[in-house]
Length: 290
Image 1 (spheres, helix red, strand yellow):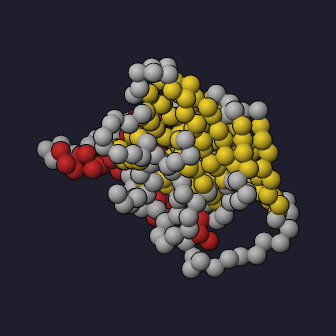
Image 2: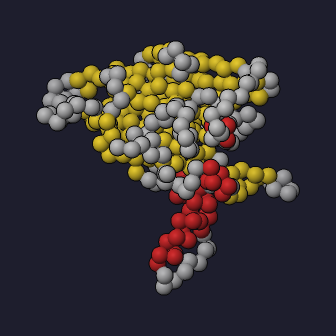
Image 3: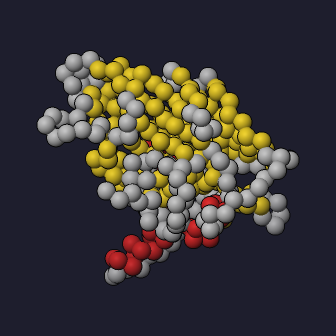
């Protein structure tokens, strides 16, 4: 299966993930994968493994406001997979959520080792789209700090400082070094016969100069509710064309996209506003993937 990019957008935040919901960290031609806030990449790697192997994509990410996919372990066709993973992702204002549900397909107790490898390079997205040149950044300092419920990545150069914080529920059993700067969060999940275990991983990106107090919503469903509320407020009072359902649907989709792309701004009298920032979409194409 050819891995495509799927785009999730909320204001000035967007994530480009592959068919399995991963961010590979591989710099290739075209649009780079990652979680971007204010044009800087706050997640450059986000890869799931189970028992040391990358699961196979049974049902790839579907386009929409959230990314959903179904994964199974790689193996033969002589017997059903030992487990099935259901993955759902969404982005919010400076945030990213990855909800993973693991269901055992075995009639006996099972223990699996689930791991998520994460990294943040804080690279400018336009630098990533260049002709593979590298840029010296003298004085740049990168830190990785293990937290009680996750890990924090930070980048500082002079007065410029950006941070990406990954927290998980439940907390990982261990956070491992990888030798590359990335960190591997590991869980040993004990599954009852045909039982289920759930993990929620939340990412908060704090670009330089952003002093707002933001919280990561609890789940992709909570973020979807926020998006629907924003879209409803944005299209309130708008009269859609009648007699041409296709045009009305296109207008509704366009307004919904503009509602999603709203970013904070200061008005002429100092008031706080939210205005569409449609130019950000030109970097990766229309919402839904490419």
